[in-house]
Image (cartoon, rainbow, N blue to C red; front, side):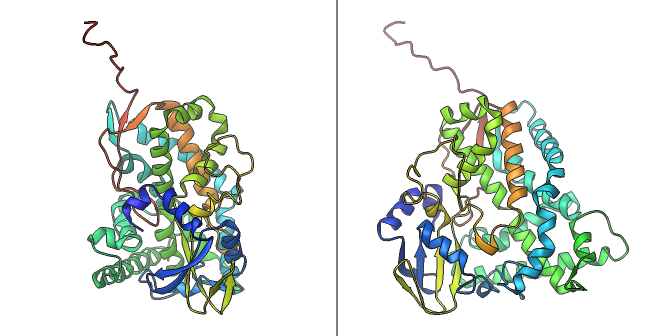
Length: 399
């Protein structure tokens, strides 16, 4: 899990699969099992009682389980049932026009610039501002949110230290305390006022006849912050890096805006912004013929499964005409990404509106994109706007 691997993980996925779709390896926390085949990962997601997500509790510096991702059924279902309606396809449709407006506002802010930082000027502010609006939080809090998110999601990158360094975990725990304190203050402010937003909905909602406790509200908010800001940004960055490197495929996107849904699904499959998720085995079992022991961590490499040629015959080929695309970019099973419908809407609108206005762009020549491992995102993405300079093919002899 290095920057070099995250920049181009496909050879590593292929090498892992050649060693077996499921195999034993040394993980960060001791002996572990690595699954790279689609069938094996489907089985992991199918049996949450055997491959637990709840056992991750505390891995992000949190002092209680995050709701609902760090609960397993049946308890997980009551929380998921509460939150699901907010992110249902019909509910998020109202965000289509606001997302389009924000896309154009961000592009307008480029002015006459021929070079931008795509990450800082577009892919980060777009989903982050939508997220803040969804929760009813002030946009001026965006820098604070991004700092807190990075302190939880990529503390080793922030500190420039190995992931297992003790200072990394200490920084993560300190950031977690800041997150609890921030949302505690926000919830205090909602005691007298209930604007029409997600936080107000949660304050007034009931689970099994009772309102959520303050701790439950904080645990939901913690998850929203850590999961709601990064994945859409990472998707936009990896998508645009691919299209910048493949102008012929970018031309297809520009020429067929009505096909944008298929484009998004195929790029989600091929790029897999979230490289992997992990679970913990609750009992001795067997996965794809490989022994798994109770308490061991099981890594499900989503990116590898999305390129598994045993599941998709032409998996390595990028095709924007796929009408059936069973990728795992949003995970699967009971813990499948809660915000996947909103993420899809943001990605579809962003790509359609961007390419209607900016059909030509490229990565600044000489730039080596430093994509972070785990969630494949960028701190900086230097991008040149407009068509490349015309090539002068006139030879010196002709002159």
